[in-house]
Image 1 (cartoon, one colour):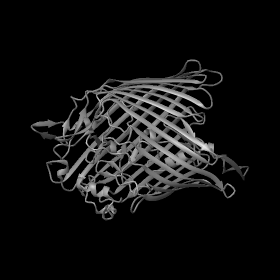
Image 2 (image 1 turned 180 degrees about the vertical axis):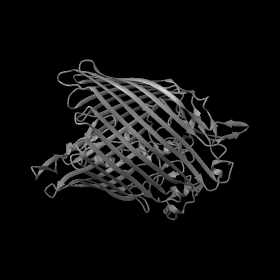
Image 3 (image 1 turned 90 degrees about the vertical axis):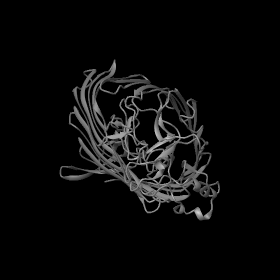
Length: 616
């Protein structure tokens, strides 16, 4: 970690004196109260996270414009929810959930600025500020905004994520709270991709089509938007605080989470691309109000371990403001109700072994749902750590599988009483070793797998009667020699049963060869190299802009194209600078690259940006 010293000032007897604050005093706290600290170092893993999502997107492939959706090259089934999720999942990659919000403790005011260029008249900026007004009280405020026109017609993106957080504890540390307010709006113009007859023109490399604005997309009059606001509070009180004189601790707490969101698809004039419509101007709006309240009781014993008992109340209201009659059948306009769930958690440390477990189940309400997690971590030594986890989950499909209504006739359905719970069994074995290799084995077994599929009547929700078995093996290893390093990540995937329903590439790989060194008496730290991304060809999921969802297709194979990036990254004090030539091989390895059927991947581009941390 960066050991540079940061100054803070205090007053003593009327005199000002300097006190040094180290970087590890600038704390970042998760909603589960796990703590890390601000890291101003530069590494290859910071390069992987220097993107719009600010996350490592190894298993994602972006669409042509920043801020559009991503196609998933591997599937994740680690969901803990026992209630349906809101739909429009393709719009949720940059939607900040509770897990994405952090809280802070800083000895001096702390600011971070993230900037990166976009495509055609735009940029993305994430500005963050945090301050402790006292040792007990902190607040932070942040805003991430994006606007990018894009290289194709009618794909402008404009997004904003506002975050306000606070955390507080009393001087005796018996009472503490964490709270946040988040408002988000994610707007995308939609064009349906390029037409089938233009795919050959795109792949030909003809100079007349290198300017992507010459392509006529499927339509140029639609947009979708996801908006949401959330109010979150987690507070607790230690009735009995563990100390040297007592081995027991008793805590009571409450978590409140209210979220109001909606998804809207607007099209000025209906288009045959989606089939017949009831009206000429399309305006589909889906809303969800969800109120969650958890009361919990913690008992901590130094011998027995930590126990938590939960009582959860959920109130949900999903749907539409009007009733639809289709083929003499009246579709309901709302799914609303209440659920009560009971749960428990346990954790205990036995020397180098940590074990944890959690169970949660709905006991009343219209939705059945259960979740069970068992986790064990063993620290063999400083270099070897082994983790295993088993997760069992049963929950209803997302709301838009159960009920959807649109001004387009084909996009209306009611599966509330016909779709079963999705039952997932998920096992993970993880070995981490810096000297050997990092290995993750991930096996998932699913009953009633639910997805969207293209039928003769358009895109429809589909629930499989076939059991899905899905295996992933991920290897990661960095090899260093002097100032040079080769970082490798390889993912092997196999759909053991359910092929054609769950489609993924067999291999995904990322290999980075780079050079690192200090210059100018260590005032400058430089990293430069090349990154190769690749995945094998497969029947990649297609994208539906009306639903903002991906759907299964088995007609078009996409993949087997390399993506080569050249980068120069530098660190000067607490500023990290990133310069990258993206997809520099686009012209000489062939124009056969797509992010989804009819949606070309990004062409060669040079982009730059920075992350600037400063401490007052």
